[in-house]
Length: 293
Image 1 (tube, helix red, strand yellow):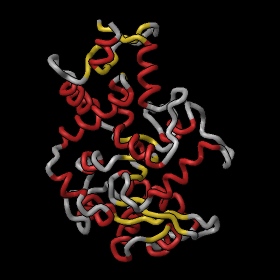
Image 2 (cartoon, one colour; image 1 turned 60 degrees about the vertical axis):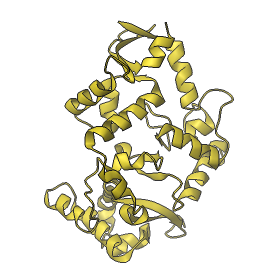
Image 3 (cartoon, one colour; image 1 turned 90 degrees about the vertical axis):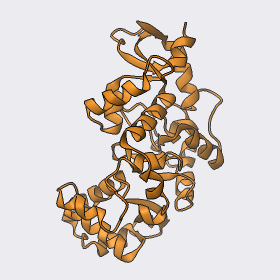
């Protein structure tokens, strides 16, 4: 079995995650370049998910600080400052958590969504087939009718203002974001906290996104996204791919097979991680396995 050393893997991740000493991101432009290089990353680190995050790339490999004046929270301003400027794609996507996606990579995600080219009609098909709740439909239709709205006005337009509808409304926002139907495009001084996201229809804010995604097959999209994932993390198990993207075991197996063809494939498998018990059966970038000797 091929083997990858733990030290080499950790050094590789420290570089791609920007979490090693002395290699922090220090400006919005550096953050944009990093997201473009990674393809996609989390805004915050998510427990149990192996993926780079903007927080760690700025603050280092440590828990997100509770203190609002922690220097690492400069990322909040960078994120809010980029909303609506089409520097990257930001929404709750992977596992319905805040995700930063490069504009080059966004069409590959969109190609896997339940959007087929007509934002005025696609959602109705999803709703009729039981994959969209009534609350999500009301939220989406409110944005279709009114245009971009802040969270407070959106709840009113969707007729979801009661206390009992809090969870329905929040789940609707998450579901619609995860399927690339809506996204935050700004911040308004609204509500008790004078801070509320402004949401818009994805296909209205990025009108070229559906057309760019149209030529990408589902297999091609999955291969691209899984490839970017391994380029970020260096090595992982197939269960990590399933957990992040929510793909079935069969789809994951087919995708990995295409990425690990014997001659020139991106990945090598199976790989063991030296010094770790029970670490066989991993997949790793071929270049790392070769480099590890």
